[in-house]
View 1 (cartoon, helix red, strand yellow):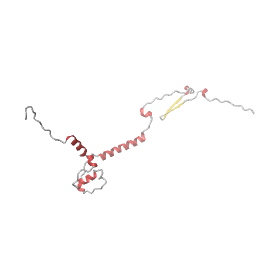
View 2: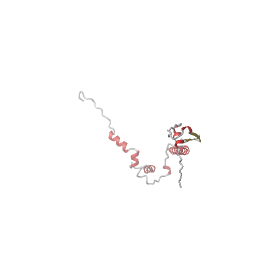
View 3: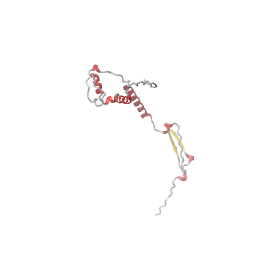
View 4: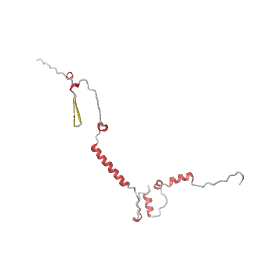
Length: 154
């Protein structure tokens, strides 16, 4: 080593960026479920290769009952059943009790309108019965149609 030279440290050789990308692309569950990935050496692994591969999934598999391994499912079947049951019950309740009205949606309600000039405001009657408001708006006497008698000459 010459004077002024620094000792070089060697970097450990790893897979590199392309190796890491290739590893993530080709060694994941999605890639292996679409394309073949190695030869299964046991009947159980052969059955799993056929059952989890998209292209091979159509072929029936024969496997001995001792080669089947039962795994957990996080109770997703029961969870989805109870969610469906709750959705059905609330849907039925909505069918019977939902009334699409502005008054029920927003609580108290105030509606105002302008009366025409032919209405006699001193004789207006209002009656509220069984949740129904009935207004009686009589016309003024001068606004009512006049009857004219017709004399027929013979």
